[in-house]
Amino acid sequence: MTPPTSSLRMALRAAPLRSVQSSHAPRRAPSSRRALQVFSEGNGRFIVGGNWKCNGTKASVTALIDELNAGQLSGAKVDIVVAPTFLHIHTAMAGLDASRFQVAAQNSWVEDFNDPTHHYDSNTGAFTGEVSAEMLEDMGIPWVILGHSERRTLMGETDAIVGKKVAHARFHGLNVIACVGETLAERESNSTLEVIFRQLQAVADEIDDREHSSWGSQVVIAYEPVWAIGTGKVATPEQVQEVHAAIRKWLADNVSAEVSKATRIQYGGSVNAGNCEELAKFSDVDGFLVGGASLKGEDFIKICNSSAVHYKAVGRM
Ligand code: PEP
Image (cartoon, rainbow, N blue to C red; front, side, top):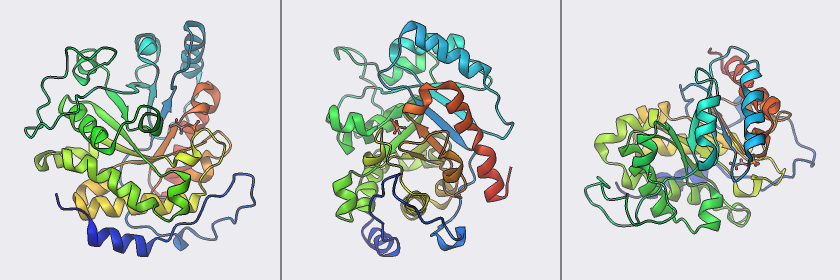
């Protein structure tokens, strides 16, 4: 696949990005949705992920499962995927109402080697402390979150490793939430889209052309500006919509129009029960990836129910 040189430059010119605003700063309400850059809306079902990160005891996980099962969903279509730690996955799978909640792992292993066949068939073995995509497949775990900024920053996962992990997980039939996003310094130096397109390219490079048709249904992109994760600073709806529209255009230019339409793009970064509805109104926001607020059952259910606001705003159910 060729690098997205000219389309990247065009998209950068088309979408000048605003710098970070604190959630406490006064925000201008969007005067009209039409004022925002919309490339082409997706057609996927709303999807909300709950990233439990490295949290949980036996007691707190059981309590959270009970809260989620007791939650009243609005009836609007929504896929809900929660990601407990590896230790708590079994409890979550056994306890959650499987008709409403699916489970994701927070990581899966791939050896960092260049396998031109894309078959990645030697990833179980002498890799102490890791869990392979093969194992997730074997255990019937349908989803995995890959490329979270905490893993990129704290564990040194490069774009190339994330790309290989995504391709390997897909090869084993897993659905992937692939995270992309810029740091504060990158946003302030106007390189947001360059960073995101580079992260997307690393995934596209690893996915065989023949597999592109299932990309849309199997890979969800989570746009998570690093400066908004766990900080209480939420990207403005305009900032979110601009980046999501740019991602969708990138997919159309570099993968296919079909994949661009089918790919669901989540926003993640300090989403909570109070701000989810404002964000869900935007046509290119196909859902959320939620950290802190996903540990509070009632709040998380409210975030899932913002799907109704989304469908109403975009005029489809
Ligand atoms: C996350 O961890 O993916 C995340 C978005 O966290 P938070 O909602 O706490 O910002």
